[in-house]
Structure formats: C-alpha cells, structure tokens
Image (cartoon, rainbow, N blue to C red; front, side, top):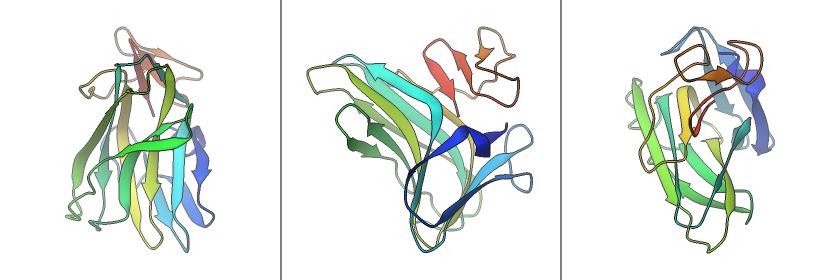
Length: 168
C-alpha cells in the first residue's frame, strides 16, 4: 500500500508521483502520477520477471483517468533495452477501468522484463491493484497476508509475491 515509495524512476524529467488517499480502489491508497512538462515512467523495484523463450508476461492495473491519451501500461525488456508492448489507453471516463498488456518472449533467449507505468506530459492518473505475472492471463489483486502469498519486506509497505506474481 506504500505505493509511491515502491516505484522507481524509469524515464522522464518533470513528473510527480505521490501516494493518494483521495482516490483508491483497493486498500487505502493508490499511486497518482502527473506529467508536468515531461512524460514520466516508473516501475516497481522488485518487479522483474525472467522469461524463457516462448513464455509470456502479463501486466494488468486499475487506472482512473479523465484522459483517453497519455496514460499506459508498458512491458520493458531489460535484457534487450526495448519497450515490448503498450496497453490500450483508458477511455477517459473518470471511472476506474482495468488495463492490461501481454508480451511473449520471441527473442530466442531468456529475457528479463518489468512492468512500467507511463504518464504523458500534461496528464495525470491514479493507478491501483497492479499485478505483473508470468502468464498469458492477468491475475487478481493479492496481498502478502493472503493464502500462498508473502511480503518481500514490511507488511503493507513492500511488494507481495505469490506463485509467479508480483504486486506493485
């Protein structure tokens, strides 16, 4: 739930990230990203998955945005230094909606990937319930104190893992 401190800078120069108690879907907080004069990209510092050739990673997240542009989920291939896939953009309805994207490793070798939240310059959005899994299907939200899950550190202030899952 301490989402702002779990996210690390990936790119951009003038954006803000903050933990928000004003808008959330799960728990008590969400992550609010605002692109000021630059885009912003953040990722969870524990959020890496290594895919063998032919394996798939899926990133899903609930997003609340007034905009239908400038907000996306991305899967970044750390091994090869390339963004592999973007989610669709939200509808801009101002309601929580679920976005998802998947990428199947077709490089012929192992690839380490991570989930990235993107906000464009001049846009803002709230993100909650993000899950990054080694699967072709998304995963429901989970916390470290749920069955078959554990916290990576302090409960409710760190990432949670379950079989092949990482909660942002």
